[in-house]
Length: 255
Picture 1 (cartoon, helix red, strand yellow):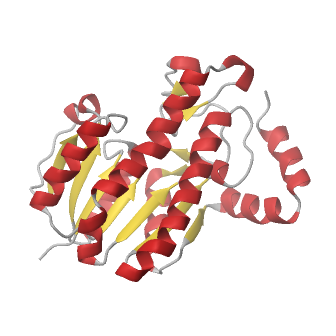
Picture 2: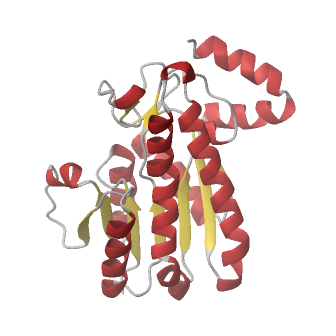
């Protein structure tokens, strides 16, 4: 019987890369995303399910998870990949925009984790959370984004200590710049836009490469996976010399 993975942000570049690599290994995948994002997709593989949902809608997420669990009582892997970025100076943001980023990036993952908790336990499966370098180190012009990604890391590393008793693995991945939507930075409220479309990114990696590194780290049972050269340098440097890290980061990512 095929293993089952649920991937949030499944219509995006990184979500699609995860899906294709898992499908190549014989998995079934459930792609969760906004209706407009999934409507643009054509699916010809009967191992792929599309699940429409706004992760900021608590009732809709609960209904979504109940339906997935009814079809798949045991879920082997949940990839918490959905998210947005926000590139704007804090002085130009609003509390509402800060809350929206947190609702999508952090609480969306929390809602999915809660709704699929028992099904993942039944499979002795895994939660794989896609955070960011901004989840463990400062990143200029991204206060809300960094806050949401810090929250994700804290939540999932803490969840790992609880779920280990149920045979559940939790892995957190922290990519640097992944080019999932190059040239498509379409801003909405206070700089909120598509992930992977930053105009100030550098040393970017492809979605396929990032997915490969993340899945390899998860398969090896690692709890934390810095993804790519910049992420590893940031991880080490921020631990050894936070001041030097901040200076270098601001030189690369100016106001």
